[in-house]
Image (cartoon, rainbow, N blue to C red):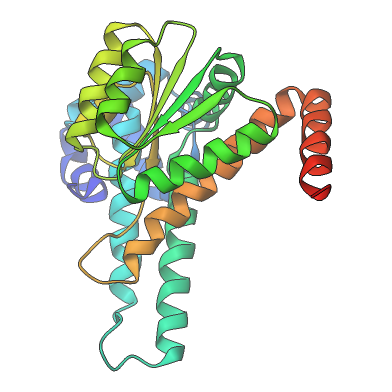
Length: 279
């Protein structure tokens, strides 16, 4: 993804005065802006949401979310360049610990920055009210999906993880507007996932996606989008950081969903624990 910070800096002089003021505020408060809903930015920059949208478009962003994604990626790259060693054949245990710790912490922090709290809340309500929830993923993404299924079943939610591509298509065929399809694909371009989403979309199911933090096909098919910020490369240490960030988001969603029906969730959890502990 193109460096959003540099795009703002290079284009700022071409903006209209009101738009330029917003751009200046963003450059002066980069870390805060990544976390802000557009309404909060409008209030703090003393402008309107319409002006922010016009500024985004003038700088060739598709919208405010696109701008935040681009800034987050640029910030991540900047931090990671300063941490310049990776795991090698002769890496020491200390280097392994420090490298994996840095990548994981960075991935979690950036991921939480880029995902809007209002979007998370909407997703929690959609999943809580769903008649049925289907999780889909391929490979490592399927393992993350299964973790979410395991958590939600503890609070008696009707959900299922499907690994097989044919099974995913079959499940998508029978979804309705009362159901949720939760798709996990870090690349956002997994063919099998795209096929299942296309079918679910035709059936008007609510689609929630979890992908890397840039525009991709999976994200474009969803009603709600969650983003993972992780520096994925050919090295082994970063390959785990996206999974850690995904699991962190899932823990947040699970906790939020359980809290929406707190009393029922506590009863379901206690029953689950009693049965498990009885054997």
